[in-house]
Amino acid sequence: MKPEIRPFLESDEAAVAALWRDVFPDAPLRNHPETDIERKLAVQRELFLVAVLGLEIVGTAMAGYDGHRGWVYYVAVGTAHRGRGTGTALMRGVEERLLELGCPKLNLQVRASNEGVVAFYEKIGYFVQDLTSMGKLLNGPDGGA
Ligand SMILES: CC(C)(COP(=O)(O)OP(=O)(O)OC[C@H]1O[C@@H](n2cnc3c(N)ncnc32)[C@H](O)[C@@H]1OP(=O)(O)O)[C@@H](O)C(=O)NCCC(=O)NCCS
Image (cartoon, rainbow, N blue to C red; front, side, top):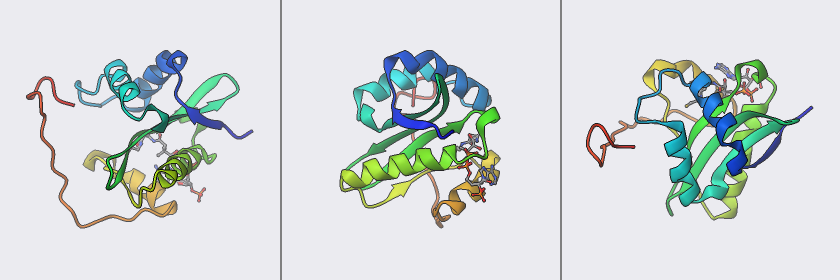
């Protein structure tokens, strides 16, 4: 059975937060699931997708379009559901929605500690770029996103 890919609903919050805590146990403390969900619901919430199998949330992808590029975060599939095309379906769902908005390119970042996942993205058409990723915590080291 293939999961349904649909936008996040408020009633998905507890299941999505539990999935992220399970899939990203080493996430920085500032990546607080409930806070990140609340922020996303205020900005392009239609680009926050979940994969649903029966009544269970089995995956997520949170995307945005800034007028130049699209970005995707929180690409996650529950461990028991991997290897069956759900990650690919979530990424295709994001790509289709970004294309509809006129977005020409989708970027993503992979933590150096998670380089194994690069093979997944390469299988679905992504390529590693010779770029240095930089960031700044706009609320200071304790409150940034
Ligand atoms: C990465 C992830 C979303 C993939 O989800 P998935 O549902 O298992 O992916 P798919 O079944 O669509 O896999 C598509 C292809 O990529 C391959 N693939 C998936 N994960 C892979 C990995 N970690 N390493 C190598 N290949 C991988 C699959 O074998 C499959 O290949 P095939 O088409 O030849 O069968 C899932 O493993 C996950 O949640 N990982 C932990 C969270 C994470 O690291 N997210 C990315 C943050 S940048």
